[in-house]
Image (cartoon, rainbow, N blue to C red):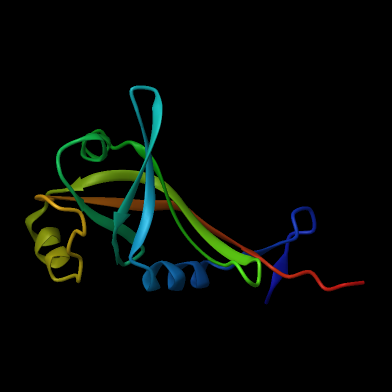
Length: 141
């Protein structure tokens, strides 16, 4: 059932559709706070159940994962001609994946880093919340 928020006019995307959209995309953005400042990074990713996983080198994203920081992950799509679009946002904590069984399973995913250089560390975002919104064309009165 379609629900449109009366205040914003945006369609609320249900959880199952959010997960379908996440599974269909390959690139998103992850935001973490480091040193009191927000940082936003594009990453290619995959789903492990409902968790978002990506590979990274040492640096800000890995530091956030090691300390179990709160993070936000977002994907979106749009059609300029139709002036429509959607976004899916998930929030939760990030963690470095170190368990050998998890690493073996994640190694079976079709996830090769696009960025050059070694990306030896796996990071997992376990969603605490998942939401989506879609811009819908309003009908003329």
